Length: 222
Image (cartoon, rainbow, N blue to C red; front, side, top):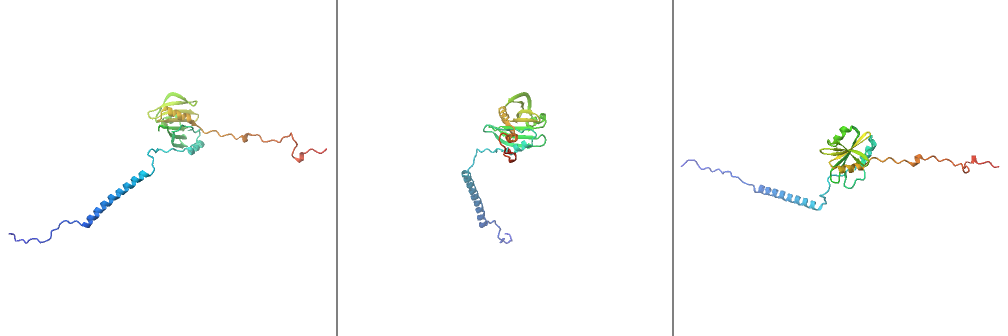
């Protein structure tokens, strides 16, 4: 037998604090209950708050102020469509007073295809390919509302091009040619200001057929 006395020291062993364990379980439970409450509130809000799942995310642009500004500033007659059928939506507008005085007006047609109206005093040979995404002149023309527009075709956009003194007008986009023609036919410039009729009227003259109302010119008594 060994002469070593038995080890009477208490041996360490793992212990779990019952209070800490209880707190941990409560924390997990509280988190789970909170998630249930949040999910329920979100579901109720989605059901009862009005929402339109078919709403169009693209907002229409009211460009009347920009158009009026451009027509005052541009060195050429700025065009914009009038009387387009229902379904057309203006989506972008801009006017740059430098580098060719460029006017831009973007639209979506009723089939949500893109159509843009572009005008500038920049040289047409460089300007048209830029705004039409590298379209090429086909050498053909198309009569639109009594004006001869050049027909351009490209890998992305087609275009109708009208040359006038000092300005090039382009109707271009991913829409089919029929829609481009529809836009081109609707383009108008600012109406001429109405002439004031009073400005051209002759000043009133005194009639000599009746007696004068001036006492100094009354006929002398006989």
